[in-house]
Image (cartoon, rainbow, N blue to C red):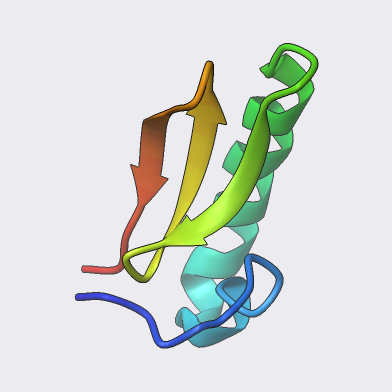
Length: 62
């Protein structure tokens, strides 16, 4: 199921409360591990992480 969130910051708010904390912790670890120049964005209704111009990971709601 895709989210209607327009931004990465809005995405966690669209999740059930029991999933938000886990998602935020995974995001924290991924962002701390990304090399310089890589980033986080919304793509196809999911949070995505770009490394070298390619999507490498996506979070989606189930």
